[in-house]
Each structure stands twice: as C-alpha cells, then as structure tokens.
Amino acid sequence: MSGRTLFDKIWDMHVAADLGDGNALLHVDRLLLHDLSGARGLAELGEKGLEVRNPELAFAVPDHAVSSAPGRGDDTVEISARLVPALRRAAHAAGIRLFDINDPEQGIVHIIGPEQGITLPGTVLCCGDSHTSTHGGLGALAFGIGSTEIVHVLATQTIIQKRPKTMRVTFDGDLALGVTPKDMILHLIAKISAAGGDGYAVEYAGSAIRGLPIEGRLTICNMSIEMGAKVGMVAPDDKAFDYLHGRPYTPKDAAWDGALAHWRTLASDDDAGFDREVEIDVARIEPQITWGTSPEHTIPVGAAIPDPAAAPDAGKQQAWQAALDYMGLEPGRPIAGTPVDRVFIGSCTNSRLSDLRAAAEIARGRRVSDRVTAWVVPGSQIVKRDAEAEGLDRVFREAGFEWREPGCSQCVAANGEVVAPGERSVSTTNRNFVGRQGPRARTHLASPAMAAAAAIAGEITDVRRLES
Image (tube, rainbow, N blue to C red; front, top):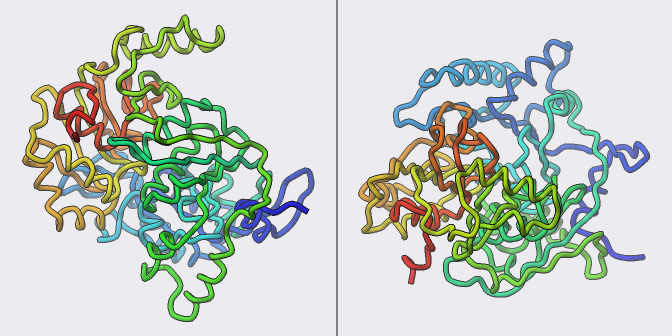
C-alpha cells in the first residue's frame, strides 16, 4: 500500500460521512467571515430558523468594504456604512468573536487568521473568499466557499466537498537577488497556466519552500487559486510551530504539547503518490511582472512583451491580443520602462511585516516619482503597529508614499478605493483581471520590492538595479 499525502491525512481525519462518488461530508474546524458575505450568511441562517452550531469556531472581521483612510469610521464610505454595522450586530447576536473596524487586532481576514493562531496545522478552515488557500501555508486544509455553503457551515459545522486530485510542486535551489515568494508563484502560474491546477489540491515542497519564512509560504499558498487550485498547502515544520507558539488562539500548556505531537505527523509519506508532479529550479527565476489580464500573463522584468502571433493556439492568440489592447501595450517592446501612475502595496498576498520591510528597503532614502500616487496599506493593526515601531511608516512617508489603515483596499476596490480609468498600477495583489482595481484600470502584479521600485522610478523597472 502506498503512503498518503499531507492532503490525504487531513481530509481523511475530517470525513464525517462518505457520500459516495468522491463526495464527503467534512467537519470544519474554523469558519472565517468578512463584511461582504458574513452578515448576509448569518441573516439567512436566521431566516431559516436556525442558530450557529459552534459560534466559538467562527470569527468575523470587516476588511473588504472598510475605508483605508486614516481616521476612518463605519461611515467613511457608503458600502462600509451598510455592511460593517450589519456584521457587528449579527456577530454579537450569534456570540461570534468580531475583530471590529478599529479593534487593535483588526485586519484582512487572511492576515489575522495566522496572526491570531486561529489557523492551525491539520485543521479544515473555510471562508467566503477564494484566497482562503492562504492558510495552507501553516499546514491547514483551507479553501473558499460560496454563500450557501457559509450558511451550511454555520448551521452544521460541516461542508460537502468532492475530493480533489493531488499535485506536488517542488521548488528547489537558492533564490537569486531580487527574487521573492511572489516571483516564485507568478513564475509557476505562467509555467502551468491559470487552469493548470484545476481540480487539484497542491502541496508545495522542496528546499526553496523549506527555506522560506512562514509569511513567504502564506504568499505562495494565497495565489494557488490563480492557477485554478482550490487548495494550497505546505507541510508544517519547526518554523510553523515557532510561528504559532504563544499566539492568542493556539493551544496552551499541556494542550500545546499534545497538538505539537500531532502536528509533527502531518507530512506526506516518502512513498506517497501524487496525481501530478511539477518541478521548479528557483535559481532560474528572475523578478516577475505581469503584462496582461491574467496572472498567467507573467514574464521576467527584463523580457519583452509577448507577441500574440507566438501564442500556442488560436484561443490564446485572441486572449493575448485582447489583453494587450486592454493594457495599452505593444508586443515586442520591453516591459521595463512602461510608465506607471499608481503603486499599491497591500492585500492578503503581500501586506505582512516582511513585505513592508522589503518595500521599505527600496524606498529608504529615495522619493516616489512625481507622476506616481503610491499607497502602503498594512494587512492588520498588528502589522501596522509593528511596522511603526520599526520606523517603516516614516521611511514610506518620507519617500512620498501614503501610509493607510488595514483593509483590502485597492486589491478588489469594493470600498471605492479604485485606480482611475486608464491609469496603470503596479500592485502587490493577486489578480490583474479586467476592472479588478476599478473600471478600465490596468494592473501589473509584482512583489513588494518591485512595486516600490516602480514607485521610485515612475515606471516598471528591475528592482535589482536598486538592490545591487
């Protein structure tokens, strides 16, 4: 009998009932709620005459709709005035822990989950957001769910899921100068396409993954959905255990010892088989930048903008041409040197303390170009306080960046903080879809250091020129 993968072990431990045809009823250990769907889910539960099954296993936070403006309140933007009080009332009525808009522990849902120790190895964690895969960086089986599924989890603490196939992506080697976890995952998506992970739970492995800090692993797992995978995971190790120890919602004392003993069993067996294997030599990766309207439209910053004539098939040719038309780019020209109007450093992908440190190192002693409006939006109040304790806020302000309050902000632009029509943005977010940052906004995805370099240069530029 062959060994089992990390995914297999966690899935099998959580099967409450085998429903046949690959479907199972899974126990859910943690449910995270945010302002766009949380209050609605709780209201629908009440309309059905049901109560929250385990309120102590649910956590709520306003993040998508809240303003990131300094001094913000519930009513700073109209959508926040509608959604934040509704989530507050519903969470309090249900007995669910709410990290309210200016709570000292508020932040983006996928930042505060790991930060608070709500995210634990070996757990099944759900949230009404596609980037829930982030939490897999700590060895959780985490995935986004829809509004109907939110109600089901609230009522039953279970969810029906079809078992996916498994994929292992092995990143080996040493990262070159200027190359970050964001570059690793963008390179992978470009290699296997935005549909390459469809139907798979992905485990990231290899020496380069083991060498990453936890925050880097979270970034990689965050963008699993951008290659079609619902789940991204990294086997927990001593780095994960050290990261979690002493956090507010982690086990304590003897319970910690028991949990740790269990967590140490959470690794794929040496003889485990995967349905697909992908291998990446990270030494060959350069700083990456997107040029089109999908994360798979990624190239090294030193490369030329692709020509649709070189696309592998007619469908891709049409998609590439449409992307170039939308982005206002010409094939064959260098991507470096493309002028930018906006830079956004933030989101559940890249707004942790290590991300802000990396961006600040580029910004230190330099000035944002006169043509660029640049924002830094910390991922949580804790990240914000820690960054301010290190003086990072001063570095950014002195360089000409705006230092703002935690929230999703310009990642999804649900709160009205948009990139203007026709403006070009370099963003540390996870999606560069048409209109993602606002109607007709043009988005280039990059690492925090690359984004900071673009803000300084006023154009897409190779960060290695500023790091060497």
